[in-house]
Image 1: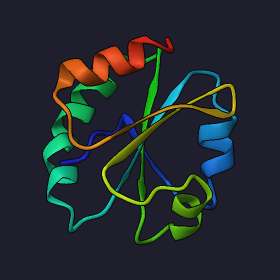
Image 2: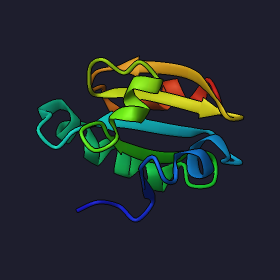
Image 3: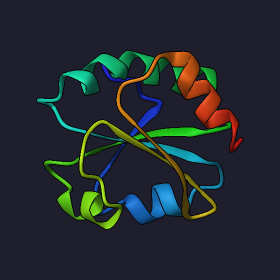
Length: 109
């Protein structure tokens, strides 16, 4: 069950929801067939609830939005890019425990 706090991003809303956001946005580049992507989904849902108002969590399905993945040079998934003030500020690769995400996000919030 997907959280209503996690944004599904496509080419149509990427600029508005990610680049134009007033808070940092952690974007999860994922695909339905990716096991590690599915493993980390509950952690992202927890973080979306826990950090509401401080950071937004968003997901980009790389199979459906290859243009965004290419634009940000995402060559393996899951890849997490933190956008701040309309720019890609940091990136992290691979499924990580919740504490690693908290540290990653904490560097920019």
